[in-house]
Image (cartoon, rainbow, N blue to C red; front, side):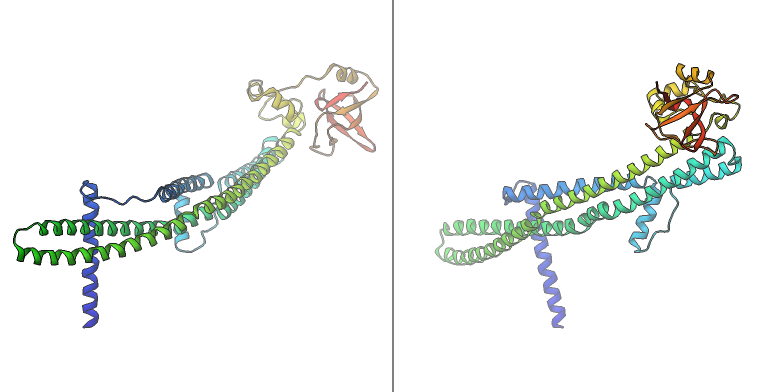
Length: 386
């Protein structure tokens, strides 16, 4: 029974406090009550915390979109995260594209130009998919998780203490209002003409003033204490910025590693596709040409490459002269070249080899010799030395 009485009294007290705060808040909005303003430093800290929260949420959400463009996949990952379960492994888009290319190349035949190129492209796409998966995992661990911890942890604590500060401020201003009204009533009572009523009224309102002053001291103390707690929490935002800066550096490093891997994979793929001999490049009744070095294709530009269909790089005059003669000459290699089969000779940029012509060989090729190694080399990769 005593416990029930205590709960009822506490409930009544809480209801009274809530009503008092509601009245104070309404009167402030209507301009009928004064409002205690926070000091400028605390206001700046509150503004900085709110700004940090807003932009952290935006950056976090957009990073999630960048790493996982599929909204359904993001929802699925969110559900598994809330259930504290690991999401099932899912093949990503580059890996799926790579598998399709490999399957298509196998169907068309690895011995055909198109089929072989599809298989090589597919293998590269799967490597890019693996790098993409590593980027997502690293970014989630080193960048997204710290941002999410701030939003769901530190900032929630700040918001809770800020709400308490707001309540303590309303209690303080309500106490100030009651004291002001009590003093006004005391002054008015002292001006009454009836001595008996005057004495009784003054005594009543004097007690009310004393009670209000005591309440004001208590609320002022609680407000000051809560303001200090909130200020200490808010000053930690600078440390949060420093921590997020380190996380941002980790994210940039992860992206740098990812794009460097992708660039290297595509560079290797470009060399492989550019190393096909002219008769191997012939496909779908298109005219074949000399393998086009990557540096030359970049210099020519994509629009020019597209407009020429199957591009044929004209042979330098001095190399044509060599093809018409029976002698051999020294030539400097302009670009790296990977042999497509055993009849060709792999080349390294800037090395010097011996070249000579062979009767019946394709006009875009010469026979190259390096020590005991011998094989066909594309003339567009060579510069004849005097």
